[in-house]
Image (cartoon, rainbow, N blue to C red; front, side, top):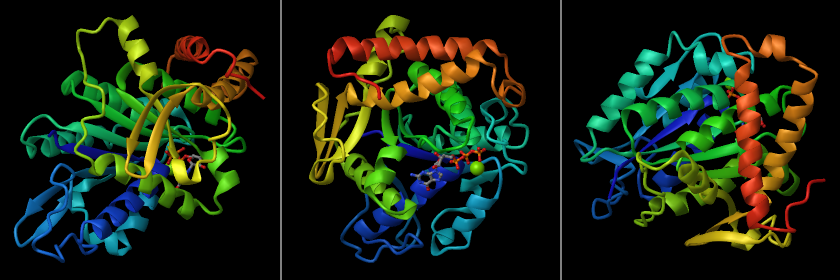
Length: 342
Ligand SMILES: Nc1nc2c(ncn2[C@@H]2O[C@H](COP(=O)(O)OP(=O)(O)OP(=O)(O)O)[C@@H](O)[C@H]2O)c(=O)[nH]1
Ligand SMILES: [Mg+2]
């Protein structure tokens, strides 16, 4: 089985990553510093690297454009779980701008690329990658897009994204970040689990509790030996890939407490992992459509474009909108009569 290197990007990605590793340590009988509490039981080797004296270190990188979220993790007991070089941060943040997160990476680009290489070299074969991030933040959308391009250029392996869609009252430019980020997900990711923050916030009180819910799903998926992430195929034609990616666009739902189960959206594909079932259905398109509608409306008026477009070419807005429209058309055709927008 391929090892999996997990990259947490931006505040949301780092918070979800922290919850994921904390829960995984508990379930794997590891202390918060990664020491085995039960020598007979081994944690999943594809997620942890074993070091001397029964210590297990997550195969992970935590990355942000500013230090605060990383400092928070360092100040908890998890600060001992991750080695110092797993933390990579810039100084200034992105000001919620995709373009800054994607193209203005002076401080973090080299350490990031080095650390990805170091992690990959520790694996027996080229690892798969797993990225946790929001689509509403400038780092979560923009820097993730940079990482996706880098992985696609250098590693040609499978990439899974756990992508948190912005809630309706997220930052005003979040629809820009979201759709610009989707453009790269469609081109470079093999499977995307879309987490609908707005929907979850209506069902679960507290961000920590939401992260616990997300983490429980991710652990179900990643502990399994199932090779469920679609394989990278560098020879696939763009059209095939496009369809392939849309086939692999998941909306994670826990069958026992599924907030979306009564919508009647046609299920295109479904996978079960323990108590978690992932559905690929037209339902996911509804949340993306809402972001796209807001994106198109704002861009038509060029609202906030001036401040938001630092470092990037404006034609990316047009390209991103076209590509996401194309994706949603595929869903509309697959889940006829089920795709309605409010
Ligand atoms: N589920 C969940 N959502 C979060 C969390 N933290 C932030 N978000 C959501 O993420 C979006 C904001 O993105 P952030 O991750 O804070 O931004 P960033 O990636 O650090 O990018 P910057 O704009 O550069 O700060 C909003 O939709 C927030 O509601 C979290 O811990 N859990
Ligand atoms: Mg941030």
